[in-house]
Amino acid sequence: EVAQALYRCAVDSLVPVSSTQVAEMTKLLENTFRAVNIGLVNELAMMCDRLGVDVWEVIEAASSKPFGFMPFYPGPGLGGHCIPVDPQYLAWKMRTLGYEPRFIQLATDINYGMPRYVLGKVADALVKRSKTIKGSRVLVIGVAYKSDVADTRESPAIDLLELLRDKGAEIAYHDPHVSVLHEDGLDLRSVDLSQEYLQSVDCVIIVTPHSDIDWGFVVKNSDLVVDTRNATKGLEDTERIVRL
Image (tube, rainbow, N blue to C red):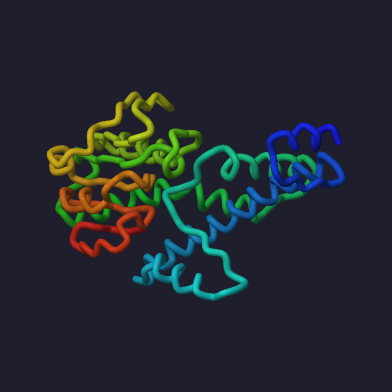
């Protein structure tokens, strides 16, 4: 009752439950629901890639069903605190009670493997241009964990930048919301997204699809774009765009 009185000052609609344990488990269910379904659609993206099928078209078509289906979308990995982290708290607690949460673990394995999967897509795309990751100039667009925010917590872009660096790439990033990146050994500043700069890099990777970026401009002035978010939907430049 005290908690309700506090939250009622700022929240329009409250849903009371019987205990703080139920309230916490409700949040964990919502977070885990998204983590598991994102893991499923990330695996679907990898399967569609091997089958030569456009996963984005598949999801769009499935979304036409008026009931029983909720679209989730693949990407380069999970970010933020809630979805990638909170289910791990639940998994840890259950292991202390002798129970192995298999869905959480499977989804975690798939989702945390996505930056390395993207790295493989980049390597394959560069090979087709007679290049390798080592020595290539690679620009990551978007280091925030989701669109139109400045939050980099658990961002898959950080893992991807580290993987690219370790493979010998010359890395840089552009993010209109994150001017400086000092995390996990990375010490970078956002570069200007100019025509001259885009034309100077070997590969552009779209990680966070901020709404204020002109993707047509990016594609037009880049030699290779690896799009992990379907940000270039409608831009059918198949010679330059590689989608997840």
